[in-house]
Length: 284
Image (cartoon, rainbow, N blue to C red):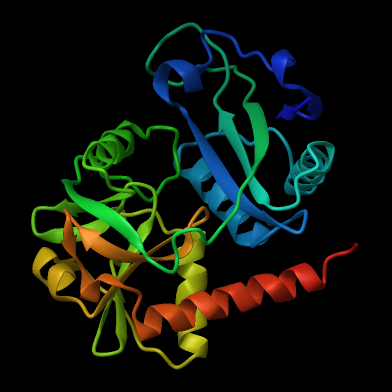
């Protein structure tokens, strides 16, 4: 039996029902987070919760529970589902109200969460295939909302091309992936789009930048072009589900030599080392 989090209760999945007039269902009026679980414990929990709070503030959405209670319930959810390595997903919607576009005056926010097992690193040695797609999303990509249809369409385009991920661009400027952030390496320097309203500031993205700086790898957070992408020495994406993932192909053509480069490999090893240290200090 699998269990989910519904408000402040852990219940069997079949008992987790939401009203058809929940604003998350009708408007995508809500926010979410997806946190990696290593050794039964949530990794980089604090920055994920801080981003959740920022998203809630940007949408003027009330969080139904404090972080201490939320963390306790997420840990219970992981334990009851007996997940060692996986991803815990949870979302908060504005709640249930008669369907009006403006915010209802009195609603109770609705929290739901689930956790699934996940294995990392299956494509890291070879790298992934990607496809280019025009970035048609709204202009507040920095908020981690439930409004993901633009991302879904891009991912579907990539899937139909036989690719694992879509690399998005607004005109000639590369923004991010459909569910990841994009980095290029040129002359040993990392380049990635700045964390403005055009991209989601990924927690893994930010952590990889920290790792690079510790290793004295220069990081330039600036817009870069499709031309720079296609001419890059190395390309990789970052996300909760991919960690650090090399890009081997773009639109069916080899990219950055068609295999992971030296800087990408260093970051992959550094990330794996951090996870190993994290798991080693967790209670048995």
